[in-house]
Length: 197
Image 1 (cartoon, rainbow, N blue to C red):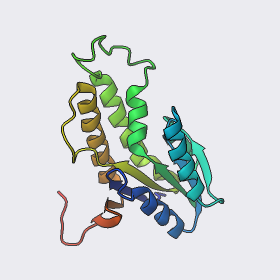
Image 2 (image 1 turned 120 degrees about the horizontal axis):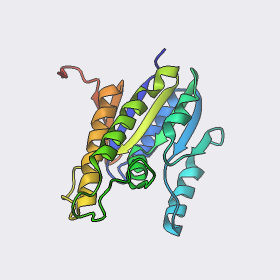
Image 3 (image 1 turned 45 degrees about the vertical axis):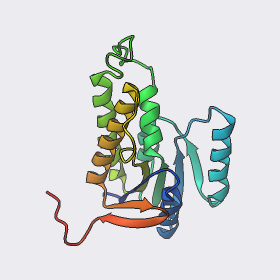
Image 4 (image 1 turned 90 degrees about the vertical axis):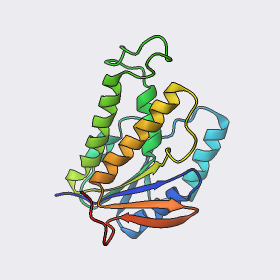
């Protein structure tokens, strides 16, 4: 039995997390909030604390930077997972130096990330999109990174491209997709009158 998958996209400070949290409340189920942010400095710690403070006390929070699929697979019908955010999750996977991806060249300028690692991250995105097969619902927050300037360094360009591909995979598997602009939600899937090929 498949749960519902909702993808919420937007830029920085667009209101996407607020909107996703509102969707979780509307589902009126047990909410497990998966936080993917790695706290490595004081400024990020303040951001995380602000996010924690606005969440309902009844929500369970799981701080998991990489193994989010394992967390979701433990769910069941009646659970809703809110993953905030998939783009940080991709960042964490991309920068992880664990095997079997030690074939990354010494010079980032040659090839910033091995093709094997990129393929593995895209495979993880497919698994994430399919993780609601246990009946739990999943709301995913993700940043739209492709609307700005072209990054000046190779690793940043690989990240931007990879984040866009991950968003496409998740959107293809989602029941509903929203794009948040200046705090206003635009529902882009399903959309009446627009036939996807």
